[in-house]
Image 1: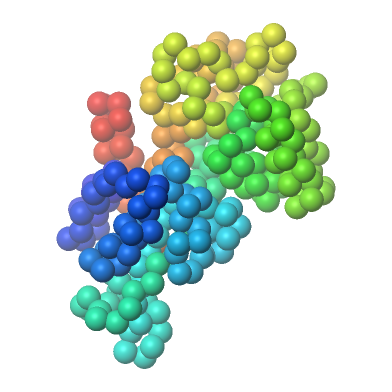
Image 2: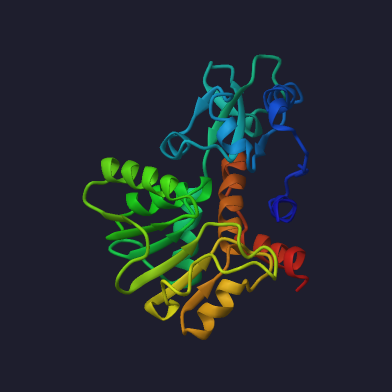
Length: 277
């Protein structure tokens, strides 16, 4: 996806994957600085670990307390910090790492573009309150959802998130457990669905998908998870997590390059790579 985007923009860059143990993340960031990388993406568990390791946090990373995108910067001749991509040559001066979060906005974009759904005023059942679920809950609350029902295998974690949301967004109805009525959206932020034999991420004895208008599963491989199969049978509008992956990646490319990402090109390559189509 990213290399297709880079080629479309005419940038002589390469996007590469590296396995970095969590206890070596700091050393990896220093190495990337030394080698004058343009930027980085981080996946779990590095998104939380990187917060104290970067030199600056963008407002997005401060808001969600997680970093999935890093841009390296140096001072230009006037002393102003500039992305390395904008400098004519690699600087000898110190380089700083600026952390961003593009995951949260990608959730809202996926809902709007993949499901045609507006978040404001919506009633949402969120399955999973770990790292991805917490970010989703905070973002949805900041966008003005009316109700959030939190279901998690460990109830105390859901209760902690409910308390956090209650203090930060007192105007939103937040409950732990299944809602009593209908919802506009079920959002799966658990990893259940990655395997074909995974159980559903909710208890069918306690809640019925016929009471949901739409379902977004953050899992994108397989294309249709067990949850989405049940949701389609129930008549829900459905989308998997591929759109979220696309939109967070496109935003990262724009942060690094300063150019508008070729989203259609990136989507085609992503679908080819993930689904072979």
